[in-house]
Amino acid sequence: MRLNKQKFNPITALSILLMTAVMNPVYAESNDEQFELGKQKAKVCMTCHGVDGISTQDPYPNLRGQKIGYLISSLKDYQTRERTSGLAILMQQQADTLSDQDIRDISYFYSMLGKESNSVSDSKTDSNSKL
Ligand code: HEC
Image 1 (cartoon, rainbow, N blue to C red):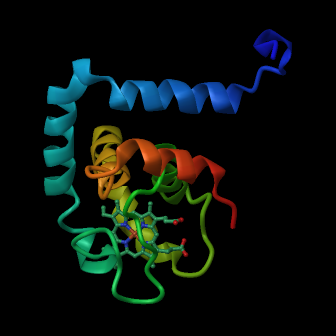
Image 2 (tube, rainbow, N blue to C red):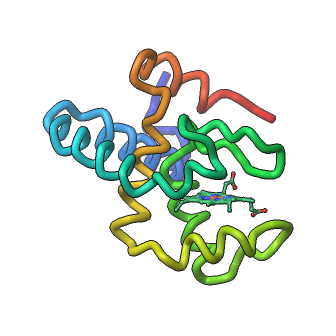
C-alpha cells in the first residue's frame, strides 16, 4: 500500500497530533497536574454532569471520555452564544465564568476521565464508532 497516494486529511492529521501530544510520556507529569487542576475547576460542573462525568439527569449530557476538541469548542460556542438550543442557556451562564485556561484544563480532565485503564484500545474503538 502506498500511503503517500492517500488524500491528506487535516482532521485526521490533527487528531493524530492531538493524541500524540496527550499520550506522549514526556508530558506525563504536567498532564497529571492538568488533570488534577481540571478536576478542581470542574467541581461546579459535577452538580449537573455527575461526579464521574456521567450525569444522573436525562437533560444533562455525559462528559466522561468526550473528545477534548469537542469539549473545548462546545464551551466556546456557549460563550459566544453560537449554541442556543434547548437548555443551552444553563451552559451559557456556566461557560461565561471560565477563562480559556479553565476551558483547556476542564476539557482535558473530562476527556481523560475513564481513559486511565484502557487508553489504547479505547481510542481505537472511539474513532471507528458511528452513531
Ligand atoms: C445547571 C446545570 C449545569 C451545570 C452546573 C453545568 N452544565 Fe454543562 N450542560 C448542561 C446542560 C443542560 C447541557 C445541554 C445544553 C444544550 O442543550 O446545549 C450541558 C452541556 C454541556 C456541554 C456540551 C455537551 C455536548 O455533548 O454537547 C459541555 C461541554 C458542558 N456542558 C460542560 C460543562 C462544564 C465544563 C461545566 C462546569 C464549568 C458545566 N457544563 C456545568 C447543564 C449544566
